[in-house]
Length: 129
Image (cartoon, rainbow, N blue to C red; front, side):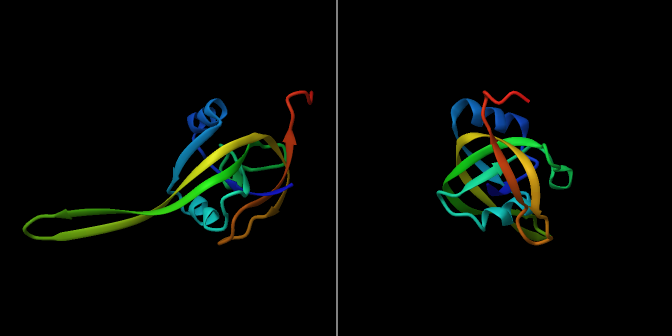
């Protein structure tokens, strides 16, 4: 199956998704943020701890279904008598529901400015490899 990928995720977040089966994550990294702009609730995505350039056939991860998606803006203001500085950063909050474990079979698209797309096999616990 072909999935878009969220890469470089924290190990503890992946463990929490395995235990709780549903987890809401705030994504701030640009590559993952732009990936989430291309998905809709109900789509399935591949999640991995590996960074995008380190993904090779055989990389393990999780397959999750997108239950909800929200784009948010963080605004930070700093000021004194001499200056005023305002910064904005966008992030995406995504609620994920665990579908199962997966293993990368092939990288199908790794183009700058577009989501990383992978061909992933679902791994069953009874598969001995």
